[in-house]
Image (cartoon, one colour):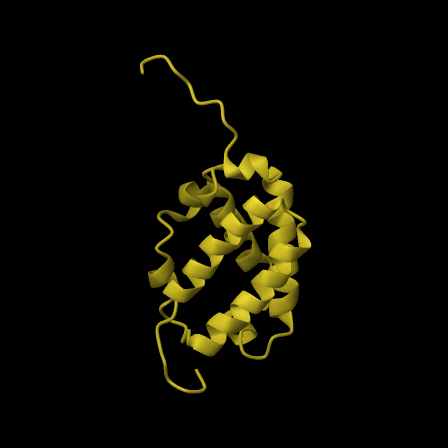
Length: 134
């Protein structure tokens, strides 16, 4: 209908905006920093740039600022992860750290379930090898 504007908050707004996503990513990367399987997949010595990219991506995906696309272009998640062997064990470890991060936020059950559903599907879609030890 012409002239009707949806004033519903985005998921990004409903869960607390940038502060919430910053906390999520900070907690997630605290786990990654000490993970012997996943840490080598982050070639930069400082995890800060990777954390920033993830935060910007998640904020944009959930209805926040479009900074990610303006600075990095289309997300192309599978292409960006292709150089790294992501097997079921890596996926499961990623999900372990992300689960702890999501749980630490204290979101409303519906928001937590919505966020987790996306993250779980995304993690499964990044698997690009089934070779042992990779």
